Structure formats: structure tokens, C-alpha cells
Amino acid sequence: MKSLQKNQMVYKNATALIGMTLIMAILLVFNACKSKDASVKVTMDNPSETFKPNPKKSEHQEVRTLTAGETAPSFRLPDITGKFYALDDFRNARVLVIIFTCNHCPTAQAYEERIIKFTGDYKAKGVAVVAIMPNSVYGLLPEECAYSDLDDTYESMIIRAKDKAFNFPYLYDGDDQAVSIKYGPTATPHAFVFDKKRRLAYAGRLDASEKPGSANAEDLRNAVDAVLKGDPVKNAETKSFGCSIKWSWKSDWTDKVNKDWAAKSVSLEKINKKGIAELLKNETQKLRLINVWATWCAPCVIEFPDLVNLQRNYGNRAFEFISISADRPEKFKETLDFLKEKHSPVTNFIFNSDDKYALIEAIDPAWNGALPFTLLVEPGGKVAFTCQGAVDLLELKKTIVENPLLGRYY
Image (cartoon, rainbow, N blue to C red; front, side):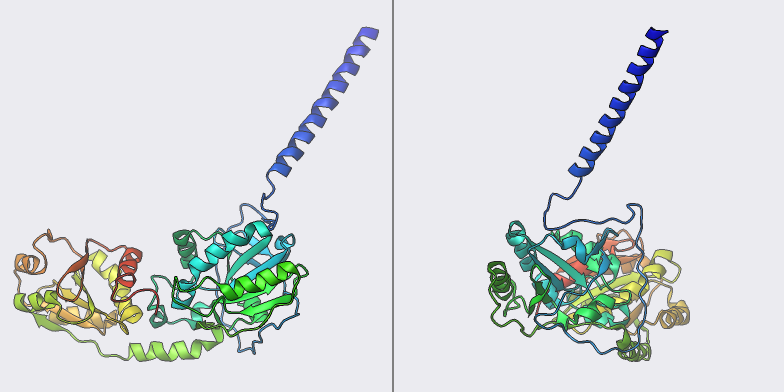
């Protein structure tokens, strides 16, 4: 009996020891999994939470830019992974830099590398950097994306952050713009520097030279250096040159421009082999995008509106879109009806012969005839891009905007 009680006691002690060991192990794992960056405490309310953007229109509001000495307004916004960041997540940072920026703006793009370099240079000094995208899709026109392959949607933010390998959180405020309204940025990019107590020490430009390679965010660096030393910032407020914030209540302007575009006339002309040869010579000073399509071709019909929209994106620069229908000449009316339905107020042609092989040879002898077929022709006739089948729209837009005739910057 005594032996049995002794064994039971040993069993209980062993069980308790194992339980305590497991608890200690769990605590060790938990501590090991905490962020190694002392300046940022990452908060995930629910690791399985999936963020879905839901932009809304707001009534007009008066927006005031924060002034030196004011306290940083609180925020809770999602990054490109759906993870939410709050102001308190950066409580360990000696200095917090919040930069309002976006995808479409040429000035914002011109400063991306500088922001990345600044973040890397100051991370070990206890400086945390956060970028916030403030724009509403209701305030942004296709024409305003003339210097970019992307707009300012949440989905486009994901692409840009990955393309540029951002080393800082890129947060989305495009649903209701509530955080941007509190901070009051006037343009992208617009930097706000807060001290340890989260009082505003500097607001304004990163530096005075937009052209990439011509400056190194000197104004921002000087401000942060002063805060780190405990000194006041000289010129605590500067103007911030860039693209205006796209507030959702400015939709009246976008509605007007969209109506003007919808009012443009749509026409269709016949073209022969000689005319196609002239198109391919491209004796203009523009990039010429040519798309061969047909009303009976499902991929053609699906991608056609996106190609027309490229004219809105880049048409005010050195770019033009031309469509050539491979429908039979007797289908002229049906083809024009389709163009009107999709609203294609660009230069539209229909090949004037039933001989489709003549069309193939006229466009590109290397083309095997499958529709759709798209090519981008530089001035003088050099072909910069071809695609047989539906295009990868993002790849095409990057090819267009990165061509020396256009470019991402002024």
C-alpha cells in the first residue's frame, strides 16, 4: 500500500514538472517570436484576418495640416499584407517618421529610393518610418496616372511595395481617409517627424530637389538628426511639392472629366496593306500601341476596354493607341457598334479585305495569326513590345511608362 502511494506521489510530481516545463517552453517560444526590431512592435489582432478595401465617398471637409508641437493623432491602418498597425506599435522608437505617399505620382516615385535609403540608414538609431497612402479612388482620374504603371488602389500598393522592396510599413488610408484628414498632408510625398513624446518636430519636404540622384532627403535627415540630439529643428515647417491629395469629395471633378471622355465621338475607318505599312513606320514622335482584334474573339473583347483606357492614362504624353479590327469588311456596322458600346474614341480601323493572311503579313510576318495581337512601335518603326494573345496589362504599362519617350518622372 505504501509502495502504491509512493508511486502515485512520484507520478503527480513528475506530471507537475512536465506541465511547468511545457509552460516555460511556450513562454520562451513566445518571447523569441517577438519583433527583433526594438523600434516596432507588430500587432496582429487576428492572424487569419483578411483585409478587404472598401472605399467610400465623404462629404467635403476642411483639412488642416498639423503644426509643430502638436501630438501625433492615433491611427490603425492595414499594410499590404492585411496586418494592422497602430501608433502605439511604434512606441519604442526614439523618432517616428510618417510619410504620406502614393503609387501614381511622379514626385512620390522620384523619392521612393530616398525613403528606402533613409529607413535603412536610421533604423539602428531607433528611428521608425511609416508610409501612408492617403488617396481615394474617387478623386483619382486615369489621366493622372500618366507617369506610372499603377493607380492608388490597395491592390496596386501591394505591387509597388513588392516591386520596390519597401523596408517600411506601407499603410492604406483610402477607404475613408480619416487618418490623412487628421494629419493634413497637402501633397505626396509629405513627411511628418515626431519626437519620443510624439510631438511634431518637423513637417514638409524630404529635400528641395525632385530629380532622382540629385539629393538625399537632406531636410528630413537634418530634422531627424536634430530630434535625436534633443535640439530644436530649424525650419520646422516647409512646403511640400508634389501631387495633391485625392480627397474623395473631389469626385465632382472626376465625374466631369469622365463625362467629357464619354462624350467623345467614336469612328471607324477602313485600312489596306499600304495603310498598315505606314502605321508601322510610325513617323510621329509618339509610342504607338497597335492592337489587332475581332468582335468574335473572346479574349479580344475582354481586354479591349483596358487597352482603350491606356489612351486615357498616357494619351496626354507621347503615346497613342490604334485598333485594327480583323472582322470581315461587311461587318463594318457591327464592328462600329461594338466600338461605340465599349466607347473607343481612338483611331479605329477595319482591314478592308477578307484575306486574313495578307493582314498577317502586313502586320508582322513572325505573327502566326492568333488573335489578339498587340505591338508597341517606337518612332521610326522599332518594335518595343509584341504579344500574341491577351496582354499582361501590368507588363505592358511598365513597358510604356519606362520607355525613354515617357518615363516615371518629370
